[in-house]
Image 1 (cartoon, rainbow, N blue to C red):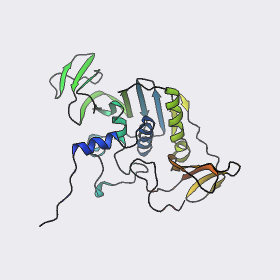
Image 2 (tube, rainbow, N blue to C red):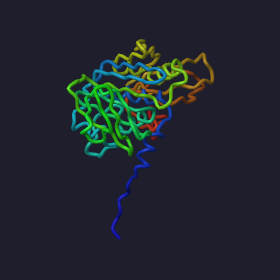
Image 3 (cartoon, rainbow, N blue to C red):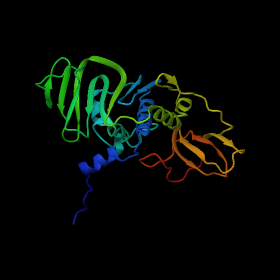
Image 4 (cartoon, helix red, strand yellow):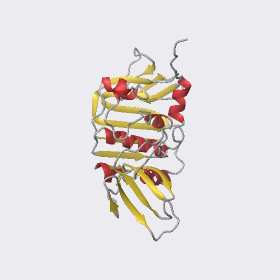
Length: 273
């Protein structure tokens, strides 16, 4: 019998979106890594209990790039490029898991709602009732049919430079300050490693890293005075895990790419660092 190819299902795709990492802070980290890969020099996150707003000054997406980088999860071998972080092309699914997503990039508006059958939004992009999946629309408000698993794509005369993402949370954040604090920890060294200015609710993330040792492979800060504490491991500035190394505390941030799992919370394979 001929060899058969494996296939995937919509349930697998939904699980990819909903069960990668499990926290909205990791979703913010994915958005920051996407912004860095897009060449952004600034990244602004403003978050409140009911919604989050992200804006960067990267190159955004053209229509053909939406087909490759937004509509498609994963990549074909011939489509792999030199992204620092976007190796799997699945991380944006984490953002979809925490609320209705409205992406505005160049003249394109992309809307994702994976948990509800209808989406009600301000009609800033000029949707009309004769467009596909529009249930009702006027100058102020639009209601969309969001059943199934996919996204709405509109074009508008109101263009933006870079990319803006608004997430209308499915569930309100219980503690905004704690969410901010955890995101800062996860993203701590991305400004240092990539030269991108990161602001969170108007506060700039410190871009410095006082490394005690620097090699071609990584920056190291080891504190020998704190015995039996774990070392925080960062992949090119983005937090991965902590690990007990020589009974010391500190930080290691790699310069080179290292293999991580899909959840980006463990290093797989050999790691010379």
